[in-house]
Length: 290
Image (cartoon, rainbow, N blue to C red; front, side, top):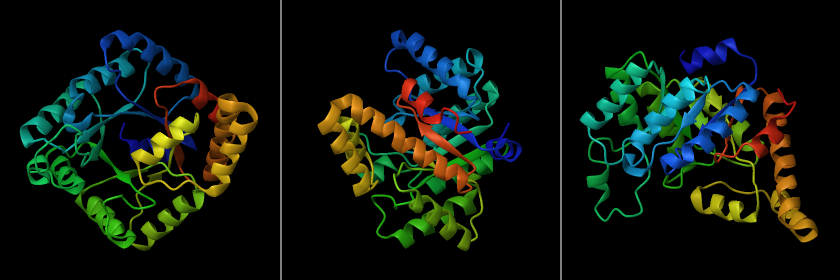
């Protein structure tokens, strides 16, 4: 079932993001984790797609395992980076043969080992909207999700320009939005309000990433444009001083629970958890919240 229809038929929900394990030897452990998280009755699970399509085959194989062994509704990611129409069409035809109704269309990031130009890398699909348009035109039965950036994409020249980009994605056929992670819920609600003022009324699912330790916080800051409130930084540093990694972990759980609770109480349709392929923290964060 297409995700917008699933949202309409559900109350507050949780969805999950997984990434394909690097080797097939890691698959049994991954599937055990996914099975543990099934107790949360997630509305769907997204599966990432490596830079330049480097894990395309694993993405499809993991989707097949999540469907067959775990009973998940799945939404694979698809990026336009270093892709041509034949490569993208082959992937999308495979989704149809697997009975998958949803895809997350992304421009994609530059691979770290790529030495060419952006013109070469994004020759066929320069922007996510180009990929969205291609999918909508050629595979109209697929529901298309796109990424939203409540604090603006790091490459955007301004916040206003970022809203223009989102408007184009929706005009080209995007059916729903999943946000980049962030840590201040006011950012999400302001983002939704500003989208509505632009006439963009598709579902906007907030992305939440619980902080496990200070090392993961550093990774987050290197990964994306998310701003970390001083209140959260102070809580994590205090926890680290008083109890080390274990206390930081618990502070991360408590903050994420507060964030999820406020989002659902404030009218968000659900939350999308970035699991990092870990079960325990996700279960603690969502316990009893919906």
